[in-house]
Image (cartoon, rainbow, N blue to C red):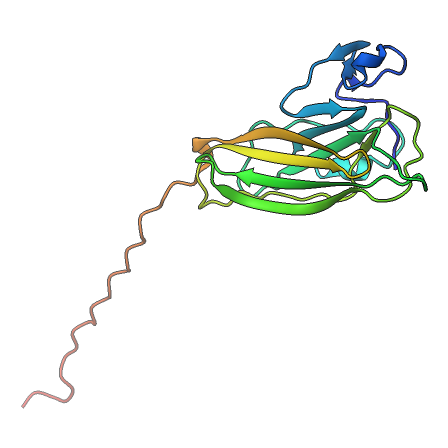
Length: 206
């Protein structure tokens, strides 16, 4: 797994904060307040981002910092991929972290569009340096179909650190523009039947 100290300009800086500030993410060396999509508690942090770049997940294990284009407006039938990042989870006596997370996708009217429960965030040894951000092990994709409504969809994630007994609720949104909805086409008219040509009666005239 790739070990990154920053992504999207967000970083956890070791030794910068006093003890009472250990819950905070950092940006540019300063404590960053929790947001809807990025939270931390008792040293454990999680962040939710959306992308349509499937290559990001393959690039994570390559050399260098992967590029992540955050998604705000989506296109129908193109997968939308929630990216969940974690940092400094609790570890048991064997040095293993136990992090799972749930995803719920809501339509513009608030009803549930899709959901996934108990996805694996981390379930093995976690031997990275402190404050290094890691990508969760399991991922899901969301596909908005042509029949689905336009508007703003909400992706909700709850990240559970089973060792530290911490639950972090996260939220991100994406929009399906009205212009992306296919226009209904009028039903094709049945082709007119060709009339048979009139034929002269067979046989000669009497």
